[in-house]
Image 1: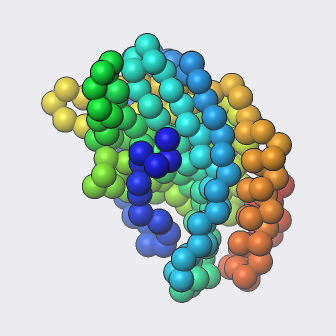
Image 2 (image 1 turned 90 degrees about the vertical axis):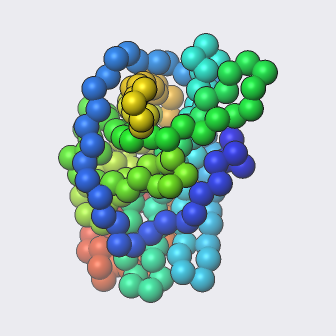
Image 3 (image 1 turned 135 degrees about the vertical axis):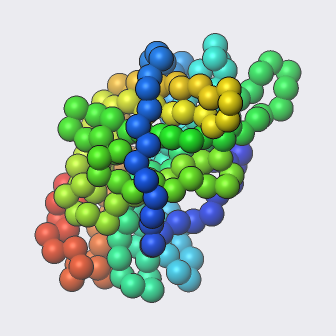
Length: 201
């Protein structure tokens, strides 16, 4: 599903607002899959775990990407997520949804309390933090595989839908991300004192 959701690489200067969402109901996806990915440009290096969710009965496709991004210009590290969603009626082309809000919630972490938000022109939403403690709490909650993702669409016909995840990323995905994160943090240790907390996945 990654190829369907082309998006710009992120990082630095994150600004936005918190956007809480009212939930009408919770969906347990019929199919989910995790993949690890590494992107690097002249400006940034980004470690990702991509969670694809599908619910044919609704029908929606959701891509949730947890990332750690190193900005080479100022040696800062941002931790957060990007999420996009699409609707695919039977026999019709994929229709990207314009999201107005996205909330990651687990027993130990809630994104609207600890992350800054940015709404993208392509309909996706990014949330991230430069705070070491919040970043560590988010990554550990995500890797734990027990969380809920609540999305809201924009416009006069705005709807809310929430996905409950009970499955953690497989070991090979976790290990790839952990190695990437460890390499990514080395240049920025002076700014992230005690950054070993983030690699304790």
